[in-house]
Each structure stands twice: as C-alpha cells, then as structure tokens.
Image 1 (cartoon, helix red, strand yellow):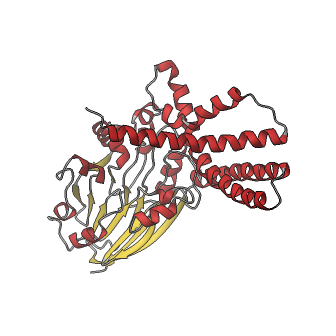
Image 2 (image 1 turned 30 degrees about the vertical axis):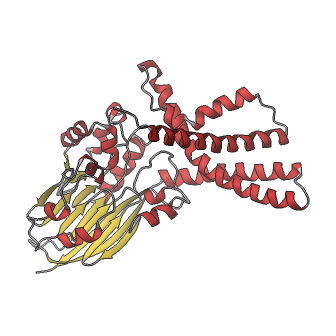
Image 3 (image 1 turned 135 degrees about the vertical axis):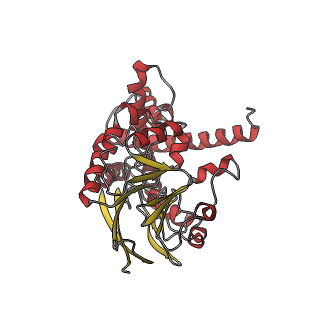
Length: 385
C-alpha cells in the first residue's frame, strides 16, 4: 500500500509536538531536581524518561518470547505515564502562568521553582492514588426503567446487569475481572449484557491468563449476550474472540436479534467501526429490528452512543452503550460531553430509555478522575396484564 506524503507529514508533525510536550515536562522535572539539590546524570534521566514517554507505543512492537514480559511492562508503565503527561502538562502550564506574572513584577526566585515544582509533583502523586482507587474500586449504579408494554407470562420485572468496556488485557486482568463476576452474580440477574470492548485489542492476554474461565462464571437465568466494540476490531482477532465467547456460553450478537423466552428481545449491532468497510458494514438499526414483535420489549446494544433518534424510531425500548469512559479522567469529559448526545448516564429519547456506561475497565492509564469503574443494574418494569 502506497503511503501518502500528507500522512507522513501529519505523523511527523504529531511526533514533533508530542516530543516537545514531553521535553517541556522533563525540563521542569530537571529544573526542580537541580533547585532542591538532587543530582542527576542527563543520560541517566533523559533515556529512561524517553522510554517511559514512548512506552505505550514501544510496548506494542512484536518481540521474541524471552523479551515479551519486558515489552508488557514497558506498555503498562507507558500507559500510566499518559495520565502523568496530561495532568503534568496542565499543572506545569498553570505554574508557569504564575511564574510569568512574577517575572513581570518582582522576578522569579529559586524558592518559587522549588515550591511550585514540589506542589505539582505532589499533586500528580495524589491524583495517581485517587485515580487508581476510582479505577479499581467499581460501583454499582441502578436505574429503574418503566416500559409501556405488557408483561409476558406474568413476569413484570426484569433485573438486567450491564458491564461495558471491560478491556481485558495486560492492564485489566483476572483480579479486576473477578470483582465483576462476583458483583454481577450477587445481583442474581435475569439477563447479563456486555455492550462491547470486552477485550483490549489483542486477545493474547485474554488467552494466556485464562480469563475466559472467569468470565464464563457469569450467571443469569436468561443468558449472557455481548456485542463487538471498536477494540475487538482493532485487535484483529475478532473471529477467534467470538468463538472463545461462544465456548464459555456468551453469545456475541453481530447485527442479530434474539427473542428471550418469548418475553423480550435482545438486539446487538456491530460496532460503528464496521462502517469503514463500506455501506454494508453493518445493518441500519431499522433493518435490524424490522422483524421484531413491537408488542414485546426490545433491548438494543450499540457500543458507541450514536443514532439515538434512529434507534427510537426503529422501535427500541432501551438503548445500552459505552465507549466514552466519560473521558476516563478530567478534563477529558469536557470533550466527550460535546462529542456525544449523551456521554454518560441516563436520558429519555422519546419513548426510549438510553443508558451510557462509563465502563468497568480502562483504556490506557488505569486511572479515573471524574468517573468511576461501574456496573449498571437495570430494573425493567413492564405493565401487568
């Protein structure tokens, strides 16, 4: 495939900007180190710092088997640094704004360099602790949804457990997955729905750490269903993933609709990523729901929270999405809030209920600020006949 010159220029520009931002952060750290009297070797600082700054990218390079653990460690460390870089950049810019005012008035003393650097580094450490706690301590959020359709066979209430964006991989592993299984099974749900991004790109950690054994312990009277998220597409192991899920009793719906015990429907769309393969990459929602009985409730999973109006017009009663992570950490939620009609929480769209989860796992840094790792508990209430 021929690489376009415009693409090369864009990548070069992005790498240059990224390098400049990291140099800015590294320079502040060396300046503070010198001010407080901590000696360092330029090579001893900048080489490890560069490995950390580019670790998330370098850790994705295929390595021989003996070196793979080192590559995974580099990827994990680099992912944490993504948070440090973003928060550090904002805090150092704020400190430099004050510094500029001081320089224009009375000058900048070494005491300010020591004090501001100490405060910034201390805040980064504190936010790392708080953010880690938010990422690894999931909460259960409950929503009671009334659906104006008659119950079938006397079942007027359904408990539905929802967990999106688990991102099982090198960062989110068996320990966090066990929390998910225990909390969901404690709900004794009628139905369990997983609206995409169950794995984080590569399926290799999922297989190597036998995460399927744990995921297969999820229990619901009427089954467990999932849909594909963008990360299942990115990993390039989609068919293997679908087979692995089938082997543990979880059906992955790819533009499919299932009638559950004659009482309601669960529909699952392919992820929006499929549209890149052409106009037939995934079904329009009206086509997906064309043959459902409109007298029965329809629960629709679509990983990315888009096309609410079309889903409501097609007859969905509940739309479940994830994908956004609610920005995962501040101030990213300011962008996701503008990008999506609903980036987190609940809204009513005509007769349809929409619930968008911030997700159970994390992408990149295992850090959450302004969001929490969460499981959704839905209580569906139907009309008594």
